[in-house]
Image: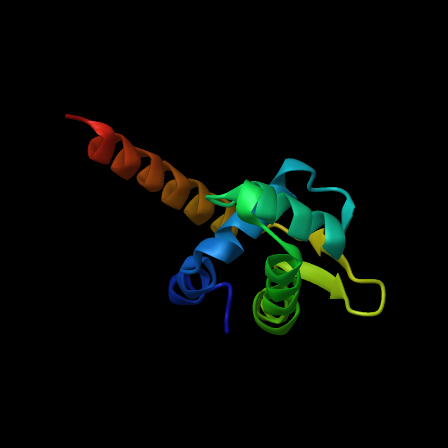
Amino acid sequence: MNPDSVDGTLRLLANHRRRQLLRILQQDRNSVKPLTELVDRLLAESEFPSAVGTTSRQALRIELIHQHLPMLAQAAVIEYSHGDEAVRYQPTNQIEVLLETIVTLQQVTEQRVDEP
């Protein structure tokens, strides 16, 4: 996937979990995040964080390792060290702009749903 193309970037950002992950990484963009911390943060931001159990934590970890992290690493949006289970964000202008646009659109959509 070519992250330099708009279509490639949109495919990367099409998944809610990847957008959540990138937003977390954006908050402290110069640090390396352990996979366990990312799993904890994603679960804390889930719709029902109090209902999260060991199975959910393990399922999310597997989902990140086998699906989302490889896709983001292949597109050079992150560096992922499988051995250390560490993730570093490598922002591009296109990712930053489109991610912010999508987040804004989600907020506007949620406000419209909440209006009487």
